[in-house]
Length: 178
Image (tube, rainbow, N blue to C red; front, side):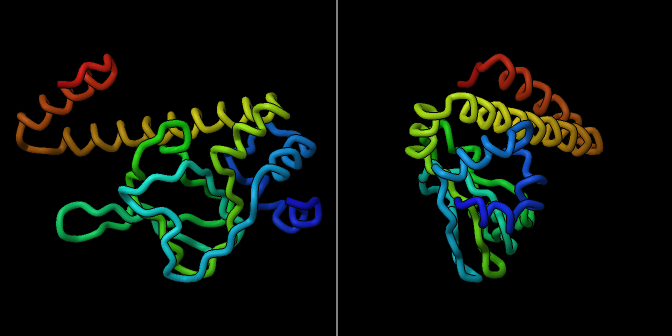
């Protein structure tokens, strides 16, 4: 991404947790490895169940994160400029857990896995900072999900759900799954 483009999206770049603690020069180095993509309203950027290892930073526009649970899709979140998505499948080749769809025209900065590997070769400090920031982002989301789930389970009148949740958490944190 050219310095001129970066200047145009300075507010979104500054608000992005993925770029926390990066210097202006490091952000420019990252921008040299990423590409700007444009998505029309209604277009799926990521599709649940499909695989692509990429990180997106929304520069302009808005997207919905949609999860297909049962018969009806649910909007889990609305993403705006400065938000990041794609981080769950970036390091692990796994299907996307949700769909991200543009609700209006979206301009996003995309860093593919291959570009990230090239960044690791040429700018290891930048790639390390990005990786650490992804871990922080995922940790924060997991922590918030844990709090939300605990609140949901605690208000459930069925004590069986409460016990199931505690057993699940114990297995999750000790990596014991059947």
